[in-house]
Image 1 (cartoon, helix red, strand yellow):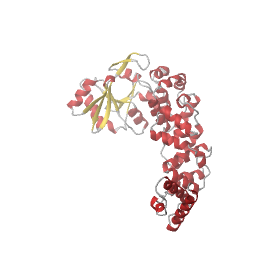
Image 2: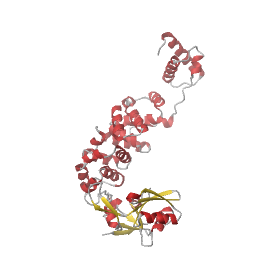
Image 3: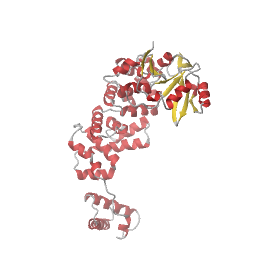
Image 4: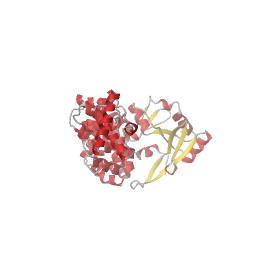
Length: 418
């Protein structure tokens, strides 16, 4: 049975590219509606991202109507009934209604259909099973409206069956709950995720990575992750210990400092104590090279950043660069067990706002002029001089720089090595 209400805060239904697609696909015996996340977000009064559309029209009819209207169509998933229409440079996935004819996990046989209720029943969660027509009427065939009000993430139908269809739904359950839910995860869904956790091993690392990184920056990430740890759901993914306390502190510190949520930084707080942890995670989640380097840097002797005075902090900032300094410092803060609002940590974390590291002013020419030949020795001299410059707290005046250069050459010439 379908429940309905009118959506009153969706201007994209009345004008713009989405409205144009709906107008194109409605009429002459066919109906089109916006489905999924856009409806959910509009009801929750949060920003709407991608707008997906479902239709009773078969893919060939969608393509025919688009061509007649001068709209570009791309058969991005035509075997599953999906055609992407590009209107004013904006893509819209248009998918023909489907229903299961035989159900056996992810290989269920499906057929195109015309029943909006049966199409909704194939989706994952009730709050994602809503649709809205061109008049703004929200159609609910799965109890999603009540769950929107309750901020509850609940599987459609039997949670065990939904999970068996795609074990990625275990991760999506916690990610969607973290983003849109409140309170504890739905009990039936939570128990089904625990019962099906062995299926996580069947998922590709790329799909797992995508969900985990999205989960890391969701509003309720700390609570959702804690529930996953309690249910034994992260160990098979990470292959190591998860630290929920440091993650909670990291999130609190980011918020206290006004930093944007960073998924890799939060992942580091959750699962990286040493660089070996970073490398294991990178392999298991197939992290990008940039993500791997960021995690590896965070795990490298982060404990040395605790209790620094500002002079030492400036040297660390110079060596690491702003991004690496910030991430490693926040990991040290998160693992300190201290208050996320501690003044000493805030001072260290905000150092890049108050001070920018100067460039090392001495050049190879300064040492060649002092008799150092080009080659490996020149590089050693430059490194020695840079260390001395840092120890002297970054002087830029000529007398100080001349003294550093002269003393470095004398030291090198005396023993021929650093």
